[in-house]
Length: 324
View 1 (tube, rainbow, N blue to C red):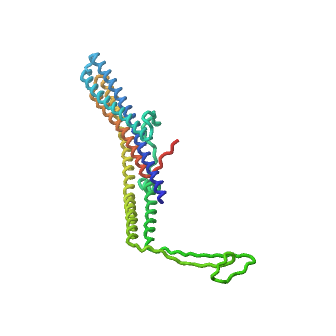
View 2 (spheres, rainbow, N blue to C red):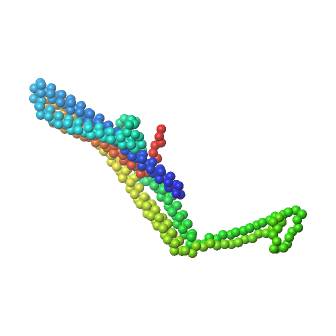
View 3 (cartoon, rainbow, N blue to C red):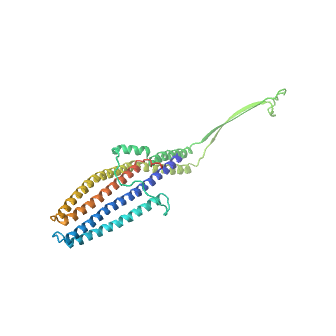
């Protein structure tokens, strides 16, 4: 049972490493998606600044130098966030290499190019809880540990009772053309037949010491039983939390996608009105700002979904993928 506990501990550690690697992996993807969003906003700022300058040069009434200052202010904020995204990507990639045991000089890249949603089959919480009971390493550790501790308690209690033993001997020898000696005081090694049985008992009478050992083993068993009760409560709660976070992120992904799509249409309409000289550049700035925020929130929601899914897989004891 102790061997099985150690095997389960090794499996648990593998699951923990896999969870950390997933977090860093998706962290790299999130940083790159944020770079894409910010690069798109930078293009909007560049195009907007060019358009305002053209309006000013042609002395169009809607052209205002103040709009140039606003664009520069927005562009400065976007450039700041771009630097943060670049730093986040480098840190996530360095953390990923470190967790994989690779040197700082080793060049690696992630296989997935985009942060996208998975088409996962839907399952209820109870299904995940039952799967956890079957494959979670902690449950296996507790099961085998309880069996081992119960056996140790029984072994300690056995010292209250005597050890009984039965011993026996049987000897027979025959030699041809040799007289048999019937004298009980003379032993003939070459021609005889005899046997016997003996019943024995060994008993330790130090019951105080035995009782202390039994109490110590029982305390360890009680501690493990308490841990088992905690696991029976905590692991289902952990599964429920990860499942709810995954469902929440799934809904937010849809909400933010609709939001940034609408903001993009809003920006296109505001820009068209601005081109015709009937729109307010403020509408364009607001539309671009909402578009950038909602698209960034969209990828953040996908990242949250991936992390919640990774936490759920860890909570149910899902086996990490085997290397190719």
